[in-house]
Image (cartoon, rainbow, N blue to C red; front, top):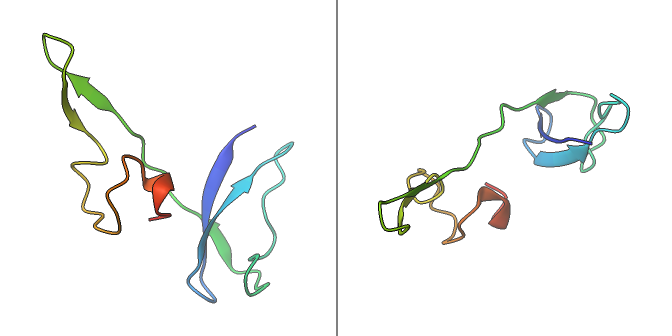
Length: 77
């Protein structure tokens, strides 16, 4: 069961939605507008060096400055 990210064009809120059986959200959970669209989700990765040390991560290289989390799920950005 995939979790997709959506954006409400009405209030600008981004939210996640668990898609069960292909049913997509028909309205925003915040403002109840029916102007939601699915966002392109980003994927995460960790690059390891020859000794197994972490060389870089996708979260560390991102432009998000909302927090110091290692995953965008940490701050919702």
